Every structure is written in structure tokens, then in C-alpha cells.
Image (cartoon, rainbow, N blue to C red; front, side):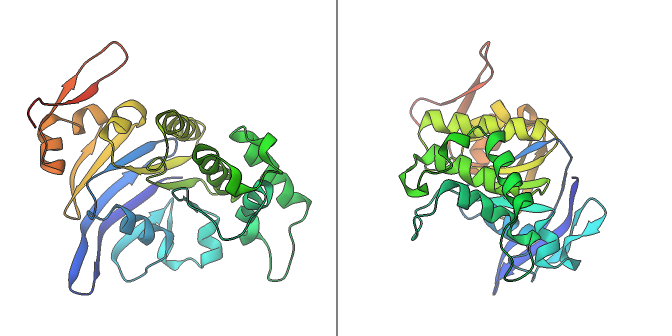
Amino acid sequence: MNLSIENLSFGYGARTVLHEVSFTAQTGELLAILGPNGVGKTTLFKCILGLTRRYTGTIRADDGDLAALSPRERAHRVAAIPQAHPLSFRYRVFDMVLMGTSHTLSPLAVPGERERAAARAAMARVHIEHLGDRPFDQLSGGEQQLVFIARALAQEAKLLLMDEPTSSLDYGNRLLVLQVARDLARSGYTVLLSTHDPQHALWFADRALALKEGRVLALGAPEAVVTSDLLSQLYGRRIDLVPTPQGTVLVPKEGD
């Protein structure tokens, strides 16, 4: 699914958060969205998801304006993958994933075999079939994040929004989730992934978009966007980019 955003602006009261943001994301692409706290990454995702409609500009998925769609119609196109977080109820993993099919049901209807098959297929896609009967709150952070991804896949939307999905994970689980995100893009999904770590863009993304003060500062191939000058502008730190046989590594400059 192709995403096109043109001149998107949004504010909370008198404070403008997004300023005429424009970019595209193509089918099969992982687009990493970079920037410090408060630059509008989460707000951008809320606009795409329809959680706020007080924006100006247009957000189109393929040929359709998302603002014209009902929540049910939007759910067929866009799915959100949040950060892992504690739940108040002890749901089974399978039931968590099955929730991703709720937009296909009429009110008061219960999931049938089609929805259950979609949930099983989604779990198989991210290799968590063996966790189906486990309580969600007893999983590791990485496992919980894979459950959220499976729930989004069960929704059968082709545009996936991942809002800092690795922020609470250890190093190994970060790599696992990022590899899954990259594999989903390569299999035909369009993935927008916000992250605080520019290294993620260099190693996993097809393109990177940098936001500063709600404006697009740079957009392009990761190696063209993630430069020492741009990182200094975004984060106020001097950082070297060191080439290695496995890819570029970010190293803070000594004394900073």
C-alpha cells in the first residue's frame, strides 16, 4: 500500500506540532522516522490512524483519502503496533491476536473460523504459535511486541505503524523486532517505524525521514540522511559515523 502525505499540519491549541509535513512511503518499504522527543512522531501516527481529525492537509492510502473513511474502513488499511505495556486483564496470547479481526465483525458478533484462521496465520508469520495459550502478561517484552505485531497482521491491513516498538526492549529483542519489521516490508507491507536510535535506520530501513520541530528536516536513503551534521542538529551531540564490513556504526565523539 502506498502512503502519500501532503502539507500535513496539526496543533494542540496554540501550539503547532506538525508544520506542512509531506512525504510518501511505498509498498514494500520500511521508512524509519527519526527525531528527539516532542517533534511530532507520535502525533503524525495519530493523524494517520484517525485518532485526531483536526489536521490540515491530506493523507492518502493508495488512491483513497483516509479522512473520508469510517474507523472500520480505515482499519482495513492501517494497523498500529504500540510499545509493549502492561494490561489490566490476563488475556491469552491467541485472544490478544484475535482482537485484530474485530473490525471485520458486526456488533455483538463473535469471531468465527475465518477470524480464528487469520489469527493463527498471523502468529505463524512471526513464529509465536507456541505461545497461543500463554497469558500475555507472563511474556517477555520481546514476546509481547511480537504479539502486537501478530495482532496487526490479523487485521489484514497493509500499512503498519510501529511507534518506537523497541524502546523498552533489551538489545537482543530489539534486533528481533527490527528484523521482523524489515521482513514484513520485504514481503509487501508498508512499514513506518519511529525510533530514537538512528542506528536502526542505517541497519534496517530502506529510507529515513528526520523530523525537527515538527518539520521534515531530511528524507532519503538512510546513509544520505543519517550524517554527523544532521545528528548534531537533531540531538545536539557530535557523533562520528564509522564504516565497518557489517555497516556504518555511530560513535559519540570523545568529550561530548
